[in-house]
Image 1 (cartoon, rainbow, N blue to C red):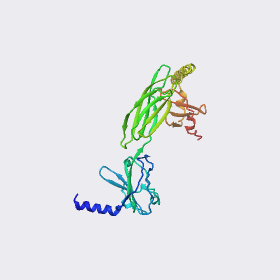
Image 2: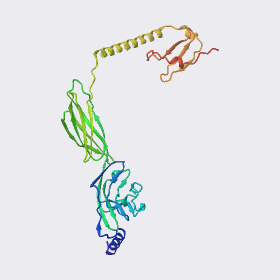
Image 3: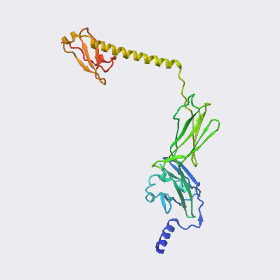
Length: 324
């Protein structure tokens, strides 16, 4: 950079900020926190001044980006960086009262970093900086692939923490305070959010509850759950199932015998009967045939490979008999 350009920049800065003789005390917290997708509040306080310039910037590795410029009662929106335009606001009328808090709406991971609040008045100027840290709440859940049963002494229990920020460490404790270690097995998705899991081998008895503790640098989330246990099956249920199975088997065998018997019986009258009315059943495609003698008797004819079964809805699907 040439000496001429440097002098020109210095002149422009001097015209904007002036060379006040006093340093204004500007106070900001060292860190500010906000939840992803919400509104971040970056406070900035200083002595009240009637004729004031307030300038919020985002500090980068090599330069500053304009976030919000308040010039003697007016917001200079044209000076704001496009990434913050329409998302950064300062309450109207507050800067002259000593409150230059910045409200940054719909924050994303790209907004995380250091911000500077700079104030200038006729008395002088001052600035301070804060670091914005963002929080993404994790979705916590338990995973128990195998339920506890009388034959098992231990089962695997996994705590899942998904879609959060920043990276979390997971621990599992039981109701007696026993620690089952910490886990940091994690993955990062394309949006910059983390998912982590911690697996522990826990005893099935005595019955107890377990708490999953998810820790980040400035946030802790907990979730408590109990083991899934198999309910013992009464003996009569087993015998009932066997009885039902035997009954179904006998019914199937009886249906097959009935089919074979009907196939072997001669039906001389069928050849002389007039044409029959037929309709297809949806889903099963059997042929529905209504016989005239005796009246209102319905038969379901199926291929020999299928068993004879009841179809209560067949009557409704069959067409009405012709009275011609």
